Image (cartoon, rainbow, N blue to C red; front, side, top):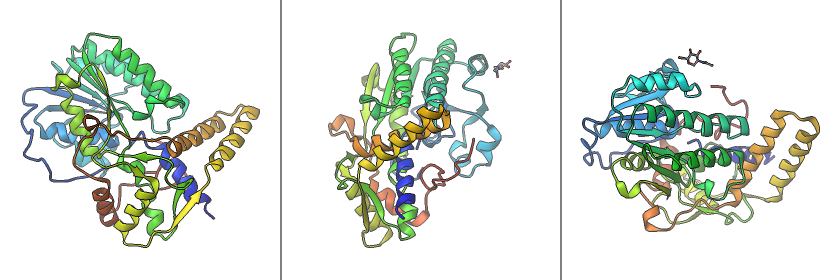
Length: 359
Ligand SMILES: *[C@@H]1O[C@H](CO)[C@@H](O)[C@H](O)[C@H]1NC(C)=O
């Protein structure tokens, strides 16, 4: 009976590295900082990419949004409003020559920001997007004479045991080994979207699922708007350059149980928890992996990897505690309170286990 919420959670974990919102804070601050400068965002229709575009436009940058499909970005109500004021250019980031010719037409580029991330995190996608496409973007930015490159990476690369982490690390070292551009590598702990995947199931009356005693891991996720500001400011703040920067939000360390309590508070229901034992992950992963080894099927290999991604987030802290590694003003409770009323953006990876849409 609890398999469905469990699978949803497993996938919620898996989406932690891919990852919506509005607030009126700081509107007056930093407007005009980007005046006269061009900023290019790759992965501009993604969860962090679109917020980065919006913030860059607000700061006065001439902002270029690179998207895979202009028509789908413009027809998607969860994306289009964020990109307004930017120049939307359709390009294939997996094709170096086409990406190079796109960037060469833009004039001097001040800052390039990569918000590229594979959606699934399985091996093939990770090496294609987290490594190869991101590397293409660096090469194209370099030949276009860009000054600074900011990479959206992931906190979990600190302790890598997953394919997508290896792919991200491979690109991180490529970026660190070049000296054509200054760079910043930003590794956010977790996105709000990845810790609110259980909103709908909880609203429907199903229990909040957590692992072990619900106190196994702690995190301080960061709001997309806060993260967007941090990413952009890296281009101007030399103290953030030539470095790997771990970054979490303003919250104190939150256990899963605490997140569950906050979510119930937001929806106005009494807490109802289901404690799933951690061995369940191993049981599921081991069996899928055995089948994968037996059959050699890539789909099963990917399913096992997706299970490992889910397990990773069930057992590893995504937490920063140093003051310089905490940023922003939006708390998780504020986010939960907002989505409890407004609902959250449809996301096939966190809201529904079955049939993710191909894009
Ligand atoms: C890559 O882009 C170039 C130039 O736009 C195009 O001629 C070529 O067919 C593309 N290659 C692939 C594999 O799509």
